[in-house]
Image 1 (cartoon, rainbow, N blue to C red):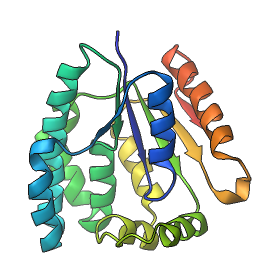
Image 2 (cartoon, one colour):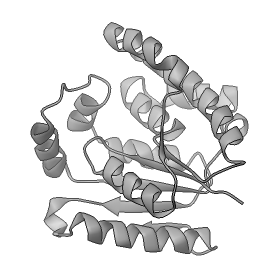
Image 3 (cartoon, rainbow, N blue to C red):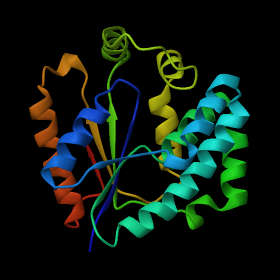
Image 4 (cartoon, rainbow, N blue to C red):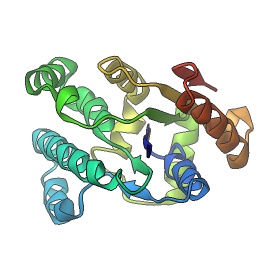
Length: 205
């Protein structure tokens, strides 16, 4: 049976690098979190800088993505770069945990959306993240980088993870650990394979 794996994590933590390496290893691709039909609408949502609009947009997109992944799983393993977990985590910061959890419960999101076999949660300390955002030189997104730099997004993720029953592999890519990308990747891969084979549900390094 093909596997559905989601990479989640803070902006500039190395999530895209690790997911790309893993996709190459298992001979698949990394799928974008936003369905193709919604890319133009996303630009409009970005321009308004409305927290409520962003939440509704990404939540609807998550449901559409779930349907897309369900079909693709018949033919291949699916690796997704962000999913409903990031939508919920970032919005608990911007809108408040009570509002987001109430919408989550009312809509029964965890019953209506296809859930992955494992979540790979990539994180890094704020010093590492700030250094990488500066190095990238990109425009700081009001709902992404800016939230990451000014809030405890990691704590928000951990709150949201408790709303689901999914194995999690945590990867800390902070520069203070002195590990190379290759070393982080090998540790991650070993733990993911262990979880997929029925091992422990939580790994952190």
